[in-house]
Image (cartoon, rainbow, N blue to C red; front, side, top):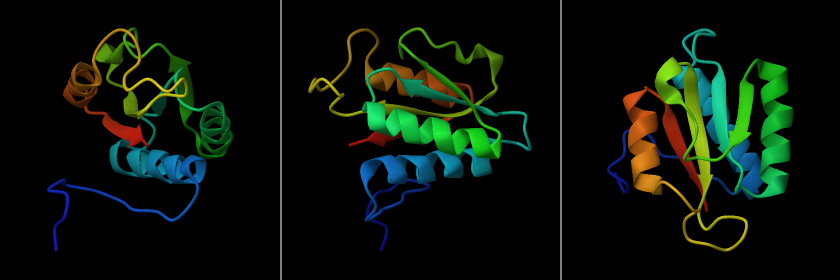
Length: 119
């Protein structure tokens, strides 16, 4: 039964940080293109424990982590396999200030990157 209508979806009983790391690894496996898309963007408003685990996992499998303002990330280099946003963010806001999550997601998808929503 297709419950999401998405080309790919995953459900996990793991804690949020571990589930986010699994999702990052899926992005890299699907979009990484054998090292050509080895960057992964993390919004600075993702929970700190999730950022920490993503950085740890990424270092062992060759993913270059970029943490910053989701409104300012430049996807034009076309070397991002994925990105993650927090909903609600670590401060309790539904969206972080700046660009809407919908517009961010469109920019990432236009560059061939996948987007994860940590909830």
